[in-house]
Each structure stands twice: as C-alpha cells, then as structure tokens.
Amino acid sequence: MTGSKANNGLLAALFPRLEHRGQPLAPHWLFYRRLSINFAIGLTFILVSLAAGMLGYRYLEGLSWLRSFGHAAMILGGMGPYSEPNGNASKLFEGIYAIYCGLLLIGVTGLILAPVFHRVMHQLHLPDDDDAAQRSSSEAVAHEKTDKPKPKPRAKAKP
Image (tube, rainbow, N blue to C red; front, side, top):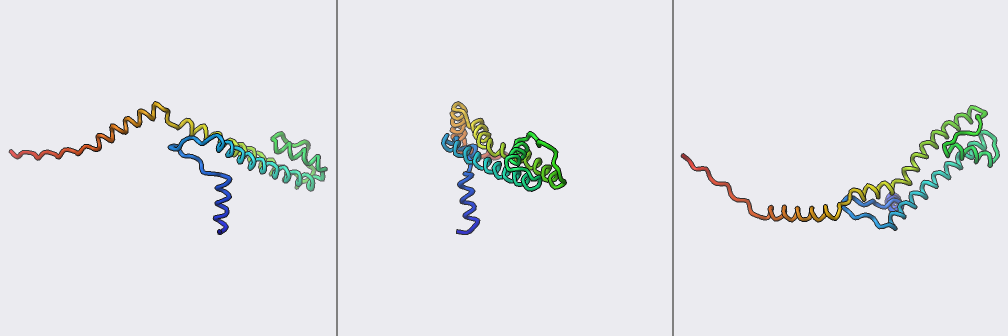
C-alpha cells in the first residue's frame, strides 16, 4: 500500500462521502457519527491552538503556566487580552495569535456545523411523497408517448 492510498483510507474513514440529491437521507447513526468526528477534529484544533498560545505567552511574556492559560484562552475565546504585552516580540505574537484564533473560530464553527447544514439542505431537497407519485406518473406517461413509433411524413403532391 502506497502512502497516498493510506492517506485516502484515513481521509475516507474520517470524512465518508456524503449522500447526493437523489439518494435517501442518511440514517441517524451516520449523521451523529459525522457530527462527532467533526466535533473531535475541531476540539483537537482548539486544544493544539491553546497549547501554542500558552507556549507563546510562557516564553515570550514570562508568565506562569496558569496565567499563560488564561491569556491564551481569552484570546482564543474572542474576549481579548488581559493586559498590554511587554516586548515587541510579545506584541507581534499576540497580534498573529489573535488573527489566527479569529479564523480558527470561524473554521471550527463551520466544521462542526457542516453535517447539520448538509442534513438540512438534503432534507429540503428530498422529493415529497406527493411529488414523487406525480413525477412517477408523469414519467410513465412520457415513457408511453416515446414508445409509440412516429408516423412517417407524407409526401407532398406535385401540381
């Protein structure tokens, strides 16, 4: 097994293909599985980002681990910093970290809500029972019309 096939297997396991418009709605267990996988991936991104923020505050600002956690969590949560950073490197780190955390918030929210949006949109595009019955009857009528041989055109009479 090559590396790309192994990666495709892992990606296929984490993100199974979604059903298309003509397919029936996925069962509840599959929906909850998709939701929990996306939630776990989002939580992993958040925890790794929190750890990176804690390391930055710990080594650039010289804060304790607990205060570093508080500062990183406040920025990650969108509340802003506790206090003004001391050095230029700290100011640069805090600005980049704040921008990253804002984008992470948007991305993780989209990642977690993607299965919900897909299910709602798929449910809205499923045919109703009345529509399906009407469509099948109109398709049957159209099929009957196409089965009949077309009449040959008449030759024009010469005067």
